[in-house]
Image (cartoon, rainbow, N blue to C red):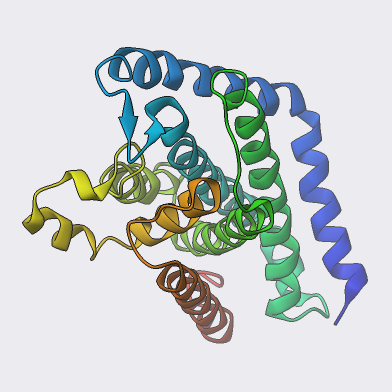
Amino acid sequence: MNVIAIWSIYRYEMARFFRTILQSFISPVISTSLYFVVFGTAIGSRIQEVEGVSYGAFIVPGLIMLSVMMQSISNASFAIYFPKFIGTIYEILSAPVNFLEVVVGYVGAAATKSLFIGLVILGTASLFVDLSIAHPLAMLAFLVLTCISFALMGFIIGIWAKNFEQLQLVPMLIVTPLVFLGGAFYSTSMLPPVWQTVTLFNPVVYLISGFRWAFFEQADVPVGLSLLAIAGFTALCLGVIWWIFRSGWRLRD
């Protein structure tokens, strides 16, 4: 394992993040505040509690998941797409590093940025609602695993994309609807039985459910299935990335 190569990629990506730290910090704070104004106040005035939890607190895990997933994909996809765009990707491909070291550097930096954003949102949310975390370690574990798995997905999107517009295609048209339909701002138990069954085919349901369990010990699906879903998604993304580097797909165009 070439630790120097990993550290060099990681440090370069984090340096770019810290150059815009003010925007990176303010943006999630403002977004979180707006969500609480819209969902917490407007809708929360009509829905007092969901499964014994105040609605304002209930939406916090889903809000964090939404932001973390989008940030992970965005950071990782741009990080690998930009070297393709300017042609420096060939320097990385010709360097004495394997695909795993490249992935660890880029995905590690993207996951770190997303983790920071998630913690900022958690801190901001605690200013609006009385928030308690039943299982802090489990919450942190779910958060880190989500950051890593969706950063891997973003890495794939960055390699697949041929222009900047395609970088936003999958997050906006696929991931965002799945999050909103995956119980981010409501419990799937509130849906009719038929739709409860349909939502089980939404992989995001398992991530949000497990993350919410860490807060309130309440879950729409068993926690074990949530962990299995994250592990399976991570393994799938790693397999796809391994194939991409082995075949050179979209890297040597």
